[in-house]
Image (cartoon, rainbow, N blue to C red; front, side, top):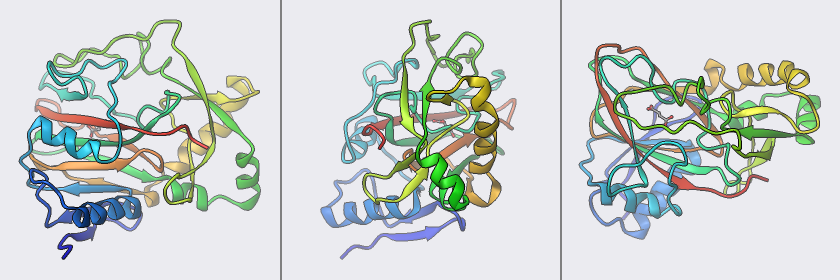
Amino acid sequence: MNKIRVNRIAGALGAEIEGVDLSQDLGNEVFDGIHQAFLDHQAIFFRNQTITHEQHKNFARRFGTLNIHPYVKGMDGHPEIMRVVKEPDDKVNFGGGWHSDMSFLEEPALGSLLYAKEVPPYGGDTLWANQYLAYETLSDGMKKMLGELKAIHTAKGEYSERGHSAQKRSSMEVKVAGDDVPSYEHPVVRTHPETGRKALYVNMAFTEKFVGMTRRESLPLLKFLFDHCTQEGFTCRFRWSANTLAFWDNRCTQHFALNDYHGHRRHMERVTVNGDRPF
Ligand code: SIN
């Protein structure tokens, strides 16, 4: 019998899953329950999990192949695991702006699995925003227009010398993107390959402009969409505890890591599952 319990944490998206021990082999029935909860709630959270690096990767592998980040150095011996660490004296955090992971790739991430090793005594929450809702709440006219547009995504801004992601943090090694950094075209409205639902797919970190338009021409509409797609009513906010694993769907969410715990350490480990080319 499938004994997992799924408790929603907000009206828009997000659910805590109980009754699962991720250090054990998951039978197909439990796995199917988790997979369904992931599709239904878009960001799912498992508290009180004690897992090794191998168990973290093996759980992620059930959803697809693992990504090796092109700019952030992985852990020694585990290149697929990226440490996301902010030390007490670091000023900038990682992921501190709304984004969908790796949308700058030709085949952006399906999902990310972030495991909390050490959390600050307060702050350091992460927010997610539901991009199905962002699409569904637009007018028919806007949906029609956006349905015909593609946008250019690139790591150029974020991972350039002055970009937020490339800033110095004492315990993370991040490579600065060169001038030859590629960019890829993705539809502004993508269809989720598993649920068939449509989601808005532009984000402030990596979406540069619309295809066939200049950046200046694109910005007014992009700014409207960036504000629209992250409005409070589409979000959930998660308060971390050590040993929690979060798993979110980058195909229909964006997220934002709050940087409000200066003087404290936060240490997370992320495994990212490769996805398909958006359509
Ligand atoms: C990320 O964007 O992968 C980091 C999220 C977080 O640290 O909460």
